[in-house]
Each structure stands twice: as structure tokens, then as C-alpha cells.
Length: 479
Image (cartoon, rainbow, N blue to C red; front, side, top):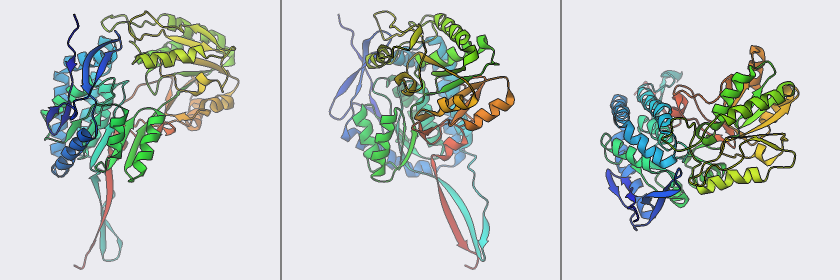
């Protein structure tokens, strides 16, 4: 007997709706490889409806006071806490992530981030009013930009939805959000939660594929397009948005270097780096994917990292001993396998390097050593549980190797030498530099990169500012 698939729906103007033309796509649980739901495959009519709802709601939401927006966001944070188990269940079905880690590592940060932006709504900053020309007073207004078209990724569907809607709504904007076509379930549940608190049309969810996202970005209504995704997707969004000069916010790929100097505690560093590389199956733009280790400790460090990988388990979500779940899809599994299959002859797989089981999309924690700077697996984003290792001779070479990729999102330095750590933090061309740790994020600090990792910031007051615009007002004192 076939199991009936759950039906997910768009959320537009305060109502749940199917796609206007009835088209759907199946949603697959990556832990089982089996479909569990259908979601709308939204087209032009659905995008038009969502944009119209957001545009209609914008004047009223724009004119609310910061205190009113704060109150709404605090209610949303409370509701997320109260319905945490429902959200966890949806996210686990979305992604196959371990239940326990989803509960401890995603729900608390999400709630904290919403509450941070609730506070940020009341902390709009600008230069004080003053007379910069005789007889005239100038002041600066900081205003919301308008309707925001937002596209969230599949690696952290719930949390990235929060990173999108919370600052936008706090600043007085309205939102049309598209989750990934492979992970829409938790976002649809968030729509139910937000819809019970916000006025109709302030928050809208449109499910669909890449074409749906393109229709959103190309639509004339949004004043801003924000995407977290691949470099290719970001370039496409930037090109589409340029046609009508939309503001663009891009958080794209990463290839984080992890620079390990000879004075590092090898066992402690190997443990921390393996956790930061394998968490969420390495499906994280900031993952510790590319280790650069001083030649004097290279062999010892590779052995320690391989041992850490061997002690890291992947498996089903309800297994309490599992550290990470499956890759997102059959396509993502194929991509990771392809990198390993194409390794050059001088590379050496010292741990993992293979699929785990024949059900779902699991891949073993993998460590590859013996690599050169121009090897494909060093230069390109794998987005899987794969850590590469290279050796360096001195600080200058470490910097050259670290910066010698097209990505510039995150990095880390492992050393006991404070002066060296400060020099490296200056020289590393990345939006974030961790020292003797890798991957922690806090709501108060910005997240975002340079080069092909995109531009704009998530989290922090800088992320809030990205969803506002600046207006100069000048008045005559003689009127």
C-alpha cells in the first residue's frame, strides 16, 4: 500500500493556498530517500499574488512603531519556543538531521536571533540633527526599503528563514520568502506561526524551484532581493536584479581555511576542527573544510584528524550517538562522490571516502591529504563531510594558500602566539576570522563574506541596517 503524501501549501496574504495552476513537486526525506510530502511548484500567478499581498501590507507595517514591531517579534520568538517540537519534527523530516542536535543547536539560536532583532527594531542609529549650512537644519531618516524577495537555502531551512525575515520585519519591511524546493516543510510551519501574530501580507511563503526564485527576483514589486545559496545562484540574482536596480543581499559559498601552526595543541585542534568540518554533514558555508598545517606537525596532525573522523558517526535522526545526518539529496551525494572519484594521483584518502549504507544519502566523514593548492577539491566547494589537508612552510605561504581561492566567507587560526594570531587576522581575506575555534556565531556579530562569497551581512546591527535605507531631510529655519 502506498502512503498518502502530506500536502504543503503556499502562504499568501494570510491564507494557505495551492499553486494557482495546481502543479506540485515531491519532497523527499534524505534519511530514507522516500517522498513524504508534496509542495506547490509556484509560477507567475502565485508570485504575483504574493507580491501584491506584501505590497498592500507594506504601508501599514511601515508605519507601525518600533515598539509594535518589537512586540510582534517577541511573540514570534515565544511561539517558536512553544512549538519547538513541531518545528524540530518538520526540520528533521526536511533534512534528516539528528533530532537531539536540532533541538539544542538550532531552536535556541533561532529564538535568540528573533529576540535580538526585536530589540534592534528600537535601536535605529543615525547622525544627530544639526546645522551644516547657515539657516538650515539637516536630519537623517532611516526607513524600511519596502517589499523584500528572499530565497533561503536547504542546509538550515528554519534558521536561514529566521535570518531572512527577522531583520526585514523588524525594520518595517514586508516579506515574500521562498524556501528551497527540497526543504519547504519547516518554513511552511513557520508561516503558520507568524501568520497568527503578524497582519495579513506582512509575511508570505511561496514554495517552488529555481524558476520560482527567478520570477521573484525579476518581479517589479520588490525593492530588495536577498539570497543565501550558491555562487551561481547569487550571480544570477545579481544579474536579474540589475535590470531594475534592486538592492541585493548575497550570502553565498565558502571554502574556509583552517591554519594550524606548530605550537597548537594537536589533539584539541583536531577535535575542534573535525566537529566544525563534519557538523551538518559539512553542508555549511563556514565549515572547516580546508586545513593548512605547518609541515613540522603535518603527519601527526593528519593522523589525529583521521582518528577524529573515524570516531564520528553518521546515521538516522533518532540515533543519539550520531553527529550528523545525510546529505540533502541524491544530487548532492553524487556531487560529493564525484570530488572523491576525481582526486589526483598524489592525493590520499586517510579516512572515509565512501557512501554509508544503501538507504538515504549518507556519506562517511572523510579526510584527504597530500593535496596541492590548485587541486579541484581545494579550490571548489564540496559541501559535504570532507576535510582536505595541505602543509605549509611559513606564515607567508599559509596566508597565500588561505587567500588563494575565490571564496572569502570564514577562516580560523590555531596558535598560542597572540601576535601571530593578530597578524593573521589582519592578513586573512575573509569576513570572519576565528582564533583557536571555528564555527560559533552570535546574534550580535555580523556574518557575511567578500569576493565570490557575496556581500551584505546577516545577523547583528549591520544585518539590520541592510534592510533599511537612508533619507536626508533639510529644513529652513526661516520658514
